[in-house]
Length: 278
Ligand code: GLN
Image (cartoon, rainbow, N blue to C red; front, top):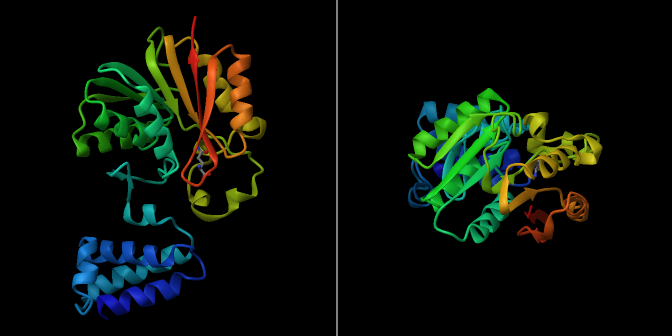
């Protein structure tokens, strides 16, 4: 089988079960032949050896069963950083780059401190650390495997100004204060039918669902962050497309100032932030 044939074959096989069949086939083929993207188009006539075709077929079969591409290749790019991923955490989403962009606009001073609550792979913390070399970024997670994975990513990207801590929200932080707190917490309603479709079926529920129609963890974070923000510090939270008003209302109830919701690239409400003044 040639590269060109393999791509067509893979795409056709995945068409029924994936909305991104062509891309999936490309990524899985590249992983099987251990090459980068330019190779596919430069060498369409090159042949796969037996081991490569076997691996490609195995990956296609697993993708047909619904397994996320990121789990099959063990990697997902976020903010142009290649991150290792595994089933212990959420797979980083492009939506979350909206949060990173906003945090970078808000972090408009040379030095500062930022805490990423529920860091998972470390995606948000590492993206911010890579862009803000004089800031100290902390990522925390209550799952030890996630902290280990985030540390692995930190080391393979050689990012120094970032640490990862085992902590159930603020449990490890006592009286530390931060200029900025950010989070992509679990915010899906436990009875949301989307939980039985697509990649989320293979991700940990602890990273996805939250009580009170998805609002329970967001409320905990808004409530507790007041003790961990400096005067004038800001809290930025990612949330569901239909939770913008609920999040702003809760910020107001907890006496934060100036809460504002930002849309993601698809035009959905996705991130809300507000300022804490003592
Ligand atoms: N945005 C993710 C999804 O809808 C959910 C992420 C989360 O709950 N934090 O698949």
